[in-house]
Image 1 (cartoon, rainbow, N blue to C red):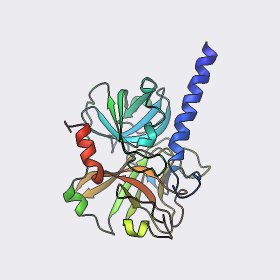
Image 2: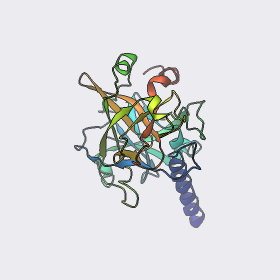
Image 3: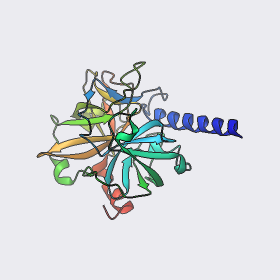
Image 4: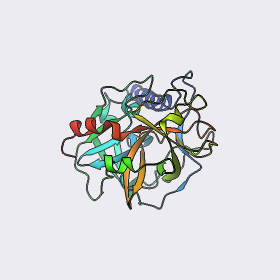
Length: 273
């Protein structure tokens, strides 16, 4: 019986990690591995983003990020929860921490329920957004506010965003122990959809951020984490780490779920926010 349980645990972990990795691809390519992880970034000041969440299997294995948005709710990517929707008992959310190796630096919350956008498409990665309801209230952590029309209208081509996470640092470079952050500029949809970039794969529910020359990006293990924007001194979440072709590859900026376009679903799902 013990051996069967160990095999089941291993199989679940592999399923979760494979599901998270597979979304980080160009839908027009042949699902080539992309990996969503922080590349070319820096370590964040410890505990400066307490709303940043680590999604864990059995409290130990980090597989995706998320962001605490208030009440009992954490926002993440639909592709992160796709493989675990039937296994809520095995998934926990770690908030307020900095080092993965120091679990006591944050607090674990058990999952009560997953809400996945009904329009999520795992082929095109459209509507890649989900909400995790926790079993108990979150204490002592201020949620990250979601972007509104006023803040979204202030975004320009020169606007710079921040993405963060505990994902790998690059191909064959391993996973960091501490929370990393990278600054990436906004890439408008028309340019991101051009033939030299994603060739029409970017829907209105996605937004792009990154450098044309590559070198800085989010990658595997960062999926589901927040993309934030500073508007008049306050940080707002405008995106969710979703997918991309390659990792910090030239010509392929990171692709993020456009929260502004999906705010109605968020508010209908969690009216109290």
